[in-house]
Length: 97
Image (cartoon, rainbow, N blue to C red; front, side, top):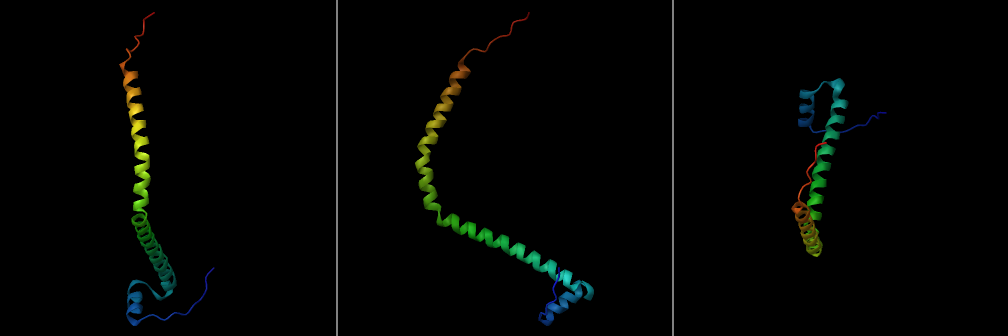
């Protein structure tokens, strides 16, 4: 569904619009341009917000990482020693029948 609206544009904008599209396609062109602008600015805004939140939460994230680091090290050691023990076993040889 479409709705007719009246807008006022600067002369320079109308001149650009006249160069890139015909009078019969202005509405479609403006619709595409507005949607694209909103999508691009929405992504830029999201990136800005995510970056600000990451900076804001950096200290908390470092604390969490420091709390979990010893557990991760213990797990790695356990897995490494388990793997070393299992590879130390002699491989079975298959017998021909």
